[in-house]
Length: 206
Image (cartoon, rainbow, N blue to C red; front, top):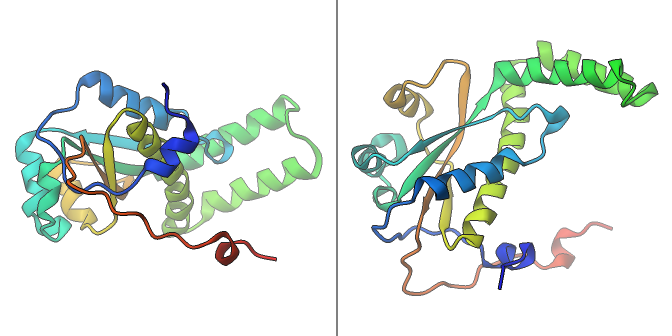
């Protein structure tokens, strides 16, 4: 029986213990395809992913100051370095806005608002652009995590890292910013504890 989205959401949790089994190229492609189909502002798709599977590199993640020596990372089958391409985010947003206006897909005040937004982004400080790109990239990563659950895999989002150190290790371009890293593998957990979540009354306003 195929797992539905509701079931995948309910089953997803942070996994920090993995078997020694590797991921196949087909499995990695499936995860990236899920990310590729995520929504993004003005269809800018600013996410870029470096998939690390080399044993020496995985070991480095588990012993390096770049991740504060989180040893469990070395046991992942893959680590996805999730990046935002800031330069292309602006260019692709501009292209989308031009396409919408030129083809009368969006008109009137809404289109004027889009043009104003794109103009602001073009001259915004890098950190502001990074914030917008990071939100889009996070959406794509959520798709990866849910697809991973459907495939019987586990993931863990890691936000504690030294960006410069990782970029130097893997030769990432200057225009790329790392949003976070995502550990992926086949879960090897003796027990899964229930996740603590706030009630609807605590998160719904009004």
